Length: 122
Image 1 (tube, rainbow, N blue to C red):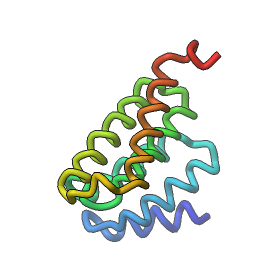
Image 2 (cartoon, helix red, strand yellow):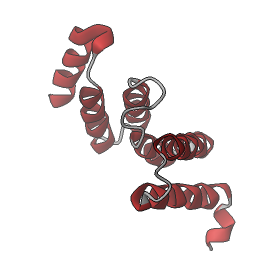
Image 3 (spheres, one colour):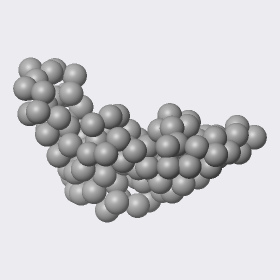
């Protein structure tokens, strides 16, 4: 029922839809194990902010649900996109000392390596 409500909000708002409504609907899709629609909503929410000036962190959620959907190449691509965007964000803000974001970049790069080399995990 909530999924329909968020869909209605997104549809009624047209091009000015709220990224938070997309994220919430994506979370519902994720709980319902509909990973590909969740990934689409997360992608649209991230891109809603132009060149990821907004919440580009949602790309990590996109990568995670793509992995759960078995779409490993697409999950790796989302992680690559996240890392590039996060590094650009750090450079633009001059915040290389941002420990949280630097840690998230390290985690994303490690997850990408694990996905790219699944036998190395064993």
